[in-house]
Length: 178
Image: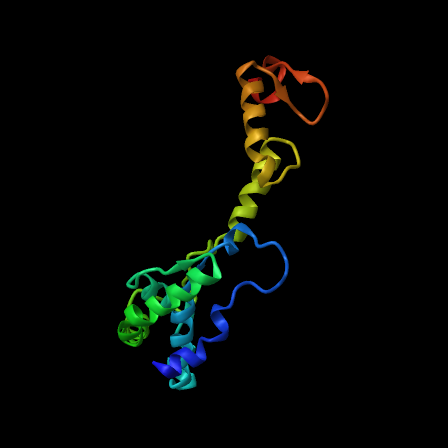
């Protein structure tokens, strides 16, 4: 326990940047910091080959989902939470991180590049390009909903906008002719 306290001494200091903290910095989950230190400690004991198959983020999620959170916003609260975290978490921390490593290594459904971020970025860009072509405009994802609503409203009124400032009568459109 003394070794853990020494390794985490600098981690629990308040934000010392002198800048106004962002809303996400107003409180710290001390459990995250303790888990990170324990993951680093256990990773040091693993071989490079085993480390290559592990994702720190997956292990961190595994551990944090099984441990209570200890949030603090003030120096005094931070110190109190640190003491409580050592008393409550230390006996469980090593075991849960070890279980997390085993769970990540033994997960048959997990692949090395598996993550929750969307991997279909090129497909999404192609969809946006197709929408721009269909709706005859240049816009990004930020404007997409507005442009689609505008074009649907125009279509509901029988107004079709075809790369000009003039509205077109559907009866005269080449696709409508037989």
